[in-house]
Length: 115
Length: 115
Image (cartoon, rainbow over all chains, first blue to last red; front, side):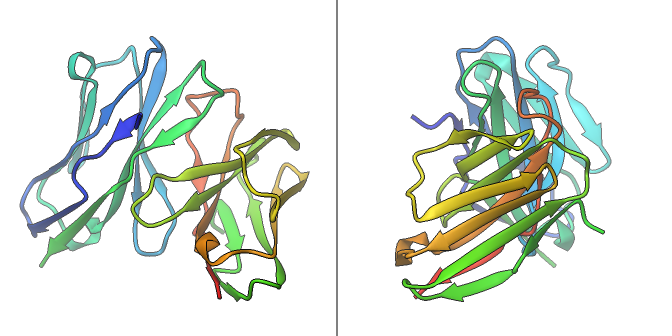
């Protein structure tokens, strides 16, 4: 079973629209970490944010915000006032403490921002 | 200089060739990783080195052979590959594989095409 599910394969928005990328995860650990990465066309995955399982406070960084809800096992990512430079593939990832210290990545959501 | 550098960026090889991918990190990290990224699939972890010791080999075929001479350099030696091995190969590093809150830092990847 997929540990990290990103149901949205591709999303297109017009510049300046807000967009939310969904991430649902599955774990039995009580201690775990969640991450978001951005992969622009250049190929490099860029680390955006880390959240541990004990910190459900939502976070805002400029136009980016993250909504972590343990009750629904979701860690959604919102970009407000999207820009063309936001076009990329975005990956959500889960890191568990117990099971081999692995990162589990979702399949990614490809975001296209149309000017 | 970027934190994690991979060479070459692109590689085309025949099934009988032998080639090597190179990765170098300038972040002072102690763990290095090889991931395979194929279209529409989650990132697949291939190998993990922590303090130069290989700690994980995720059932990778023997035609892929990693080498980690020191904490800053990682190689992936390729021989007798198959067309289905064509993918983007990503190198990553982290502070310590035992610290699951330590994010991965990725290189730009090597786009491999096997003909």
